[in-house]
Image 1 (cartoon, rainbow, N blue to C red):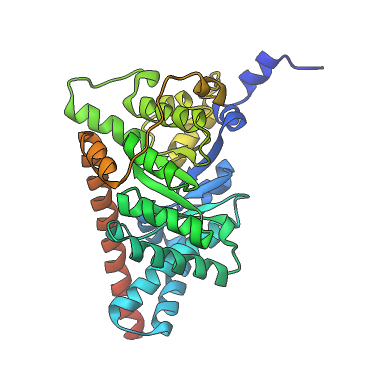
Image 2: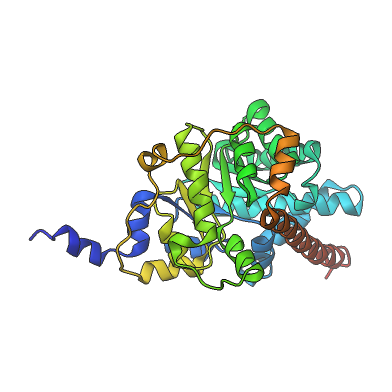
Length: 337
């Protein structure tokens, strides 16, 4: 007996429907969540790795990275740097065993204003992946969307064939500069834009289509598709499933396990809200930004300036917490504990 399309849709979860229009990515370092929701790709960041590294189930990955760093030698600072890189790669390698696509691994946010150091660190991460038998085509290097980060991304793509995911993206200026640098992918942060508007305006609630984060990502997606840029858009940092569903049709969406769970239990209809055809009809004009134009235009967007700074500080703070944890473990190993 055949099932009508309407009835079939009612049986399908919102997550299953979303996967028809958008590549679904898991925003987590927890392998169990990846097993459960079967995403195409996965993204990690210092905060997610810190959380996962505290879980007993993943201590073997931490221990393995510490052994690697100690064996490489050098000063304590060099050992910690090597351990951090190896730990991020260890998580990435394990995640890649569970997904068909790519994993995103982040360069230390404290390098966000140093183009050459970001390039060097990215190349080191890719070398560690290749040593572990993982092709660079399965890895996206995450860089902060500062001017320096965007130029580092452009250089990595052009000169080294390393694919980049530009993160902490809040302004249209950042999106334009990323497209012009021909990076592989951008991660505009939907929920953090909403957070800023709730904290800094009188308005405390929005319908999904009016959500300022949704509006921002829709504009960027439309601009990229209208002008044929190769860079793809991956909406990130969601606060609710309404935001996710309002961006159905976006190239990719990276979603936390909590919201993936809600979407898997939701049986409401999901229809594409973004399409290349609709994008072609939008009235956005083409923009070119050199460094001066970028800095001025980005600086005019108070929300983006504050959120980019705040995001870098938060990722840096979690990297420092992770380093502190690693230093304690190094001491324990050296003391035979």
